[in-house]
Length: 374
Image (cartoon, rainbow, N blue to C red; front, side, top):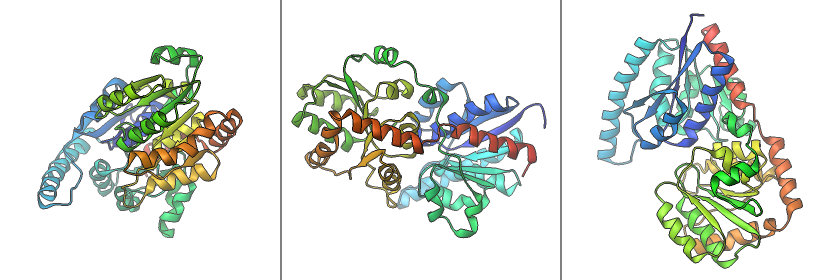
């Protein structure tokens, strides 16, 4: 193997795609320092916000998601053509040893082009149900790194040998949480109180925000405080909402320091995206999960079902109406607030299905592909 080889990690647009890639990149730097991770991201601001602090090189791709309209199709086609040119030049200049697809529309061009040039490719498939991009790319990949064994039920039998249940990579700081009191101090929380964490993942979730606020207005929990990760576009509205709530709360628009968040969490109300599920289970956080309800394949609901069936979470189907969500959340959350034994049991169940070593598992696979060239 040459002194230094490039590994492209292609994908972006949300933290759900980027954070697993960051975890793999961190693991690669330890496991194989001669491999140089480079992200092929998108031009969305969230990609810069997430990737810049890591110190890893990232290159924005022009690619955009397809929208079902004539103008949306034209913009997508123009951006895709430009992306092909960018990726073609990058592959020619950087000669990557492996291309790892992180999922989503931004993974497609690099994985497809690398495969056509006999460069080994692999995919991260962290949801139970493969996304549209991964469904198209599985045939081209040497390996597919899955979080859930249930993914096999959604893949053609002829392709199942490619599936490896590695877990969904999480960053090393989340695997090794800081002391609770230190995290409390950094977040401005009271260390004497229990903490309910509310999160709609990196972009936030309006219906989760509004439903929890409505619940807290109706049932202010005794002895609890709230750490509410609102999402950048929802921070002002959530802070305004807490003016009508008696429960102490800290509202954070966005934080890359999820290790602090999970270190203080006694209970979480969360979306059930793949990275959220991976972090909740690895950290042993009991949770109430509200899957994103507008995906055609309802893949977040399938993720949540795995945790719920394991006894690690309670699944609540999200509604558009805040009052309806509050009515659903009350019987799920309220008993857990005052039942520490139940929360402890859920925590243990979460840890049993967690795979905290997923990043190393994927990094080893990438290293083997780079060395074998297959």
